[in-house]
Image (cartoon, rainbow over all chains, first blue to last red; front, side):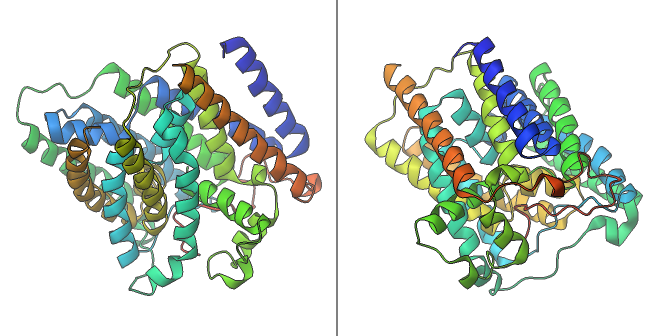
Length: 357
Length: 55
């Protein structure tokens, strides 16, 4: 599709949301378009950055992600301290989180995309990621259905750095932990490496601004996974396969209400759709070449996508909801998510090589 | 290349079909209950779903 007709379609969708849903959802859709354009335009891949660090000792992707986390924290933590309406992304430290983050980190390497990566690559037209998206949604839904049983294995209450240390303390601790992470990366890659390149810096700047806008407008940090699970939940209810009232997660008042109303009123849905549109916008000018996959690679990739969706709910988010939003809003669960997901990635890159992706 | 293009068409048609079905099957949006454009400073706590939520 050319850019002009695509712009017309996005503009028409914006006007529809403006007239029929709400001004906020219309503007959030545009924020999502910006996110998709930034992710796809800068090829800001969380999965790729981790893989390049492990396999090539290339720190550029991880440095770009650390820059994004620092910038987003510098904006989000003071805003959370200033405005009581805004929520942090606080997930409970739990067995569910530890298992989910590990499995998510493993499978995202096989599927070659985390939550945002799957979205923007699907928007770019990468066949495996387009096929994974509905399976990711199904997995995310099933993860939410089983979440109470996973939480019963052990959990503590969410830990907010801001509540414990105040805004300045939370910001200082977050930046200190980021600096320590980069020191660890420096020890792994050794001297003489290029750390920051233009594409990663631009991507980090753009995404930090857009994540902050998301927080200011929606009142909650950027998320991806919840929207996917909601889509599958709605479809399952409509098909008579699922009764939300009989489930611990979906019978909660907020979730039960969202299952009954249009997904266009859901914050994460609207940014997810925007991300797809923004990536399609990029694809209109820069066609993405992909290598054909074998039948085995398809099967492994699709299975990984489904498990990735399931584990993302157990982990209380993906690289966006748990890592970016968790860390930038001062949640301990974000800092537990990263090492577990990275440990999973260490295995994931080997599985990826084994099946010659 | 042609198969990728066909897959893209199926993907976007599927997404569009889901959105149209969802819109037609859901109760009408009550525009009088519209959330504030900017949550920060609005006095209304955010009530959206997020993946970090345990409930």
